[in-house]
Image (tube, rainbow, N blue to C red; front, side, top):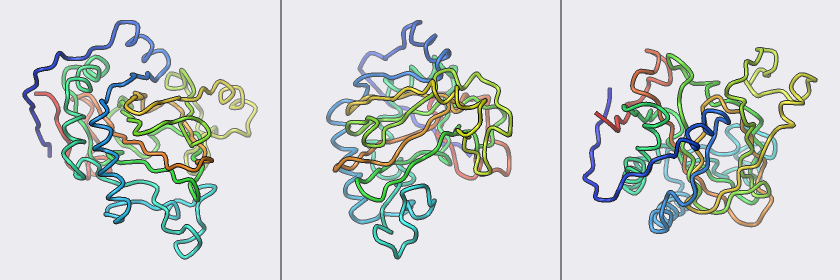
Length: 266
């Protein structure tokens, strides 16, 4: 099942330069500065703050996943610390309006092809990282729980505030989306192991993703990435969506096919 959305726009479409396209394919990620304007970021933050205060479902708590640093249970101190607000697209028109804008669509078409589809079963969320009781997320590829015909999807990560290593910003490993990894390099939860001689030199190549409000990170679904807990006194907020080419559908009967998809182009 698919949903369609077409907008009438007057602004000129944004496009990636050939060098940016090459960089994405080489490194597996690309940062676009100031892609979301201040008014868009302010409205996304307003909606997020309101839904967090009211704990508007669907959402996920840090205690649900039990990653390092998370509360041990819902009854423990900080047990109701929110990790993410799910189904971001339904939380306000600002999210749908932004992700269907030419500023987002045209770069995605350059990376994925003319037909771009947004699966609503994965990401489509607002990531929250609180100053206390947030957790560490180990190295992983987002394809670990996804089921598509091939591993060809791009994530769009929008910073609603400053993102850097000390407040739980992302780290990525350039070129990791092109590397063949053996199954033994991942643990039972599909996290990339750091305790093996053959993986330590790979992790040593990590780089931090430094983002300012309105900056956007595009990264391949196979790019290894990780994040620590938030060590500052301010909550970090990010919005994340996933996109695929039109000819890379989810596998029937899988979780990836459990929700409708948004078709952004004819």
